Image 1 (cartoon, rainbow, N blue to C red):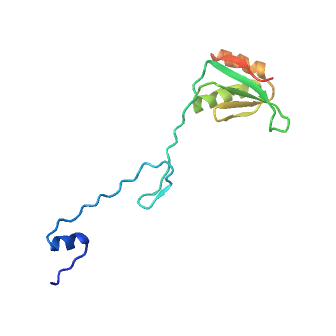
Image 2 (cartoon, rainbow, N blue to C red):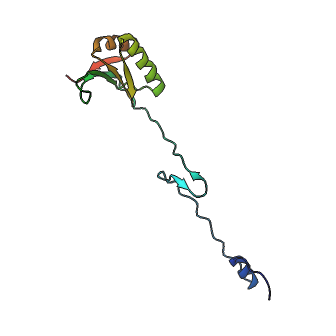
Image 3 (cartoon, rainbow, N blue to C red):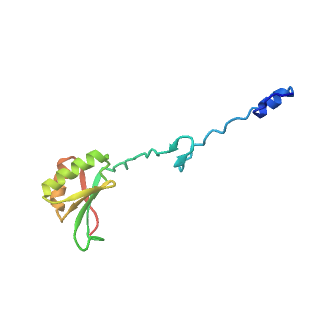
Length: 132
């Protein structure tokens, strides 16, 4: 008996038994998985959800964490990232100052709340001043 038995299924077939079928484990959809030996690095698809607006754009002035420099924070707009950047550009140009878009808020340098209120009302937002 000089048969080459290279696997367990060949051995089972030699003794007249049906080979045991082993199911390959299917990979679970684990969101924390970052690397797999089969496919390499796995990039996660991040879902960007937009917080819906309640109809009011909230405008507040902050100096916290900015060494006393005041900025005006506009939140509650309910716009996607592209529309936020366009609105921020328009606000910065109108106010003649700098600023940025952080998460779902727009930060404009300086205390230009009245100018920002006029621009937002022209854009169709109801403006509510919050804070002190």
